[in-house]
Image (tube, rainbow, N blue to C red; front, side, top):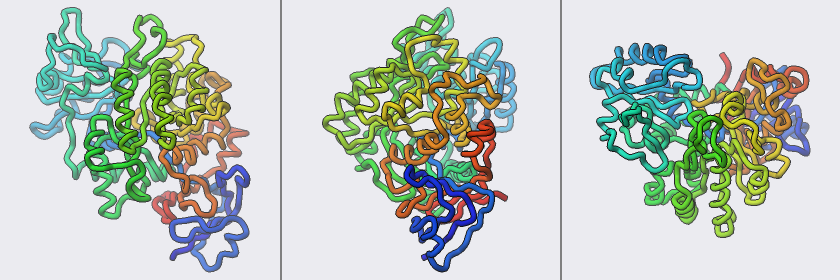
Length: 520
């Protein structure tokens, strides 16, 4: 069995009782000794890392790798600042597609655009009759062309579906913008299995290079199959916890999937439900109306249906995670969990995002043992939107400090590709509550900042416990040897230059005692 000794470096173990050591011995896939005991461990391959800092491998608790994978074969509208800019990119992309191919991509952000918003008639002019379905950056709205509406049978007579909305002009005609569950009405272009597999392999390389050794993926069955194919070929290096989407729940039950089934590389994760939409599209479900909007958002899944779907999942032996952004959505999800927790005391119950929460509900998170799966860069991206559409209310927003102080378990992720899947961007946001440009000075709602050690724990042990595992996430004997070698001491930067945490680079990434990435 192979033995590897890491020495001549600072090693942050993640163990509160002994957070630092200077040597670590790995045998096979697990850590067998640290400190002086590691140096007495006998013949080993030696890894000297002067100047580097070793951390536990980071786990992104919430991202969409299928969506990330699509970037390599799709049009990217993230940086567009207007409808005309977006149309120019779509036209250029569509022109190079083979005959009959659909237009994939999206990630447009209406909050960045000046001038008119998206509509199907302008999209028709640049897509040449091809099917075009372009989700927004948050995934809670989609810009589609007339071909997509026709394929879906959507007309002025089509009612809004439960949990969704079809945008219409003054004459009642669909404009080509769909919200939340209305998006499910249109056929979504899906690449073939080989394309998915190759694109996921490329995403895996980029995530390992960013310092991620594990992920909890939120996307669909085609992504699960892609990872299964990589695993069967011996090419899966990340550890993947694969969620089940609500529409696939019956399939998962019929196949006998249970929480934690699988192995150390690919495991069954929780079932993902939606309680509401997103802040930017004003579809987050709020107790009070958005400023200047008159709407309280959208309950994507009506509460009785949500409660029953969660119950069905738990009865089948599956854990649950539920998307909730607005305070009313969070309250309702906690109501459902409170009703079911007495029967399912060992089940992992998560709330994804938990962005805007009433103070009393923070206590309920703790009392019910509900994990708050949060994405720190959502805070720094959305802070101006929050101020403009929510305004002053008795809420806790992105309330990491309040959550931890109340005893709530935090798990950190990125929601990539909504945000960049760089965990050091998340760590910087958690510590500073500032954007990359230092805005706002002192941080946005700075009382909710947390320490770097707390943030790293949320991105390691916290994310792993949210995935149902306790034998990985710390660098102590008995744990899986997943670790990263960082090119700077981010804990020193926390004190003297926290902005520089964002720029940390990864020298090496190790998973299960094997080197899977090395900076070239």
